[in-house]
Picture 1 (tube, rainbow, N blue to C red):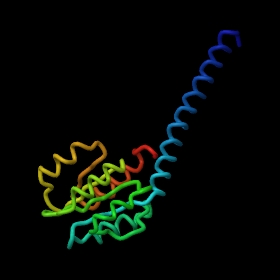
Picture 2 (picture 1 turned 120 degrees about the horizontal axis):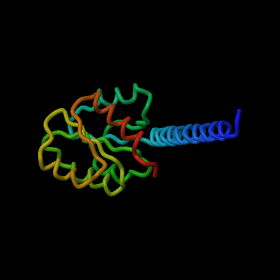
Picture 3 (picture 1 turned 90 degrees about the vertical axis):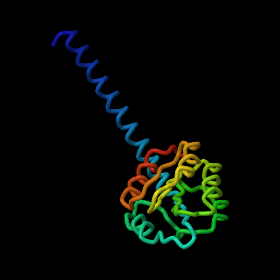
Picture 4 (picture 1 turned 90 degrees about the horizontal axis):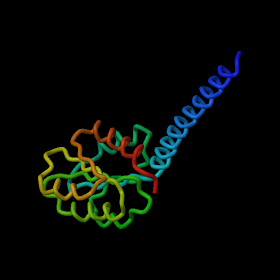
Length: 157
């Protein structure tokens, strides 16, 4: 083996090690972020009289998320946001405390998912557009997907 072949081999070896290191660094950072966000609780709000039992059960049964409390229709619970990773708002037409819940989540810098079994009105969408960390969905499976996606991408606090 001549010196040039040896230098080329060393260069390719070092380049390969650097690429592997960069990939592993990216992979572990992403997994650590997901683990940290998954360990923090998720708070679910609902409209008065709305049933979020099926959606909550689906999220809990996945064993991926920390949902320590049942959904609440008391908007005052927004003051309890401390180390929550996500707020889910079960929206229904005529929801009177949506603004309080949404503004509390936005002020806390927590991502929000607005889940509705019906159409979400334009005035609600206009409020949401002022905040970068929101998603909307109308299907339970999409709710699970959105929760997982947000928790795996939202930066750690």
